[in-house]
Image (cartoon, rainbow, N blue to C red; front, side):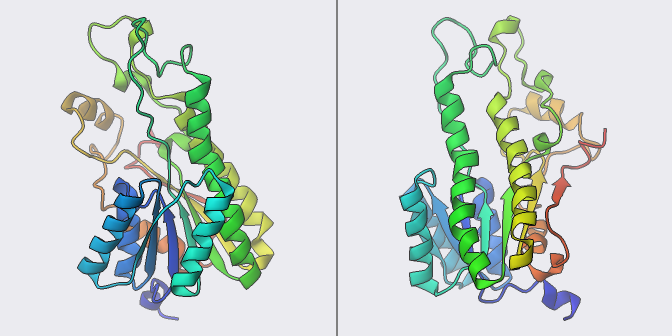
Length: 276
């Protein structure tokens, strides 16, 4: 197989959770650009369908959009069935979904994200989507891949799977310490947990032809506050955040035959932040 051919995804079907999100759409574009068939799975069914339709029109590739609550085993089973009914196969699972909590500020003036005030409800919700959802999708889709004797699972983690968040970059001037916003504890725990899941499944299904790896991106620029961007980029040797397209080639590498001798690994792609 040539180097060029090793990246080819022609006719391979990839289920992408969180497929209607900022990076989920980009993962789908990357799969489709290399000849694959993306299935965009999202809790927001309308958005999943519209994003899949737009992608199909732009790249002239078959796609499917599915509204799925990945925290419910029955819905995950139906997700696999719908994919097989539509395309007759599945080859790739990209666990990309993460909870994006919409929480109002506490009325006692304390910041909800701080560890001391972080609610059990928020903890359970974040764990349900980020870890339980990845577990269920891997269990259902991964079992199918193992039965057929080949397939790839890619878990989307974060640079915060290997380092702690630097809470100084979230600070707001004029607020006392107990009201300063912070990166929630669940983000670090979920992303680190995905690395553990990656290693477990990589060895568990190694003899069944299923490879499992993780990608740990750094921060993606998405019109964030300029002061925050400056504080964050001061921590990055390359001096900038990532563009939203810059992880696409890495995704293709990890889900294609180009990485055929790679499993159980975490590819950190963060502009060098974890080096400093």
